[in-house]
Image (cartoon, helix red, strand yellow):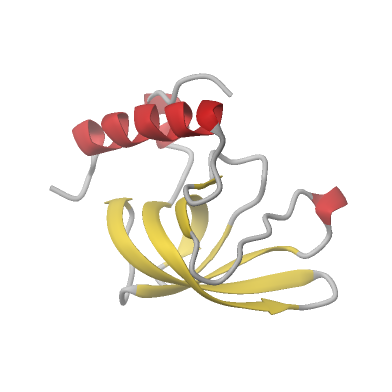
Length: 117
């Protein structure tokens, strides 16, 4: 994964950071409740969103745990969004050194280019 740019930024309806509040693990889909901390792009109806992702690792689902902080790149509308491993979505709590560098670079870019000024 290279550095984020305007083209990638424009691919998402929502870019935000948040804390995982709950995970409802279904047979095919996980419904993840996220308490939003910061929104860099997009509109949300309230500071809690539902994020859906595949519950099967072979289908590129993400697997967050309650209490973790995530940088979320998602598509959807106002309240319900979807994401997967093929986005720039990153676990900020369990990031390794390389992932921390990517997250740091992304956050610097996002703060400069936020559409939520």
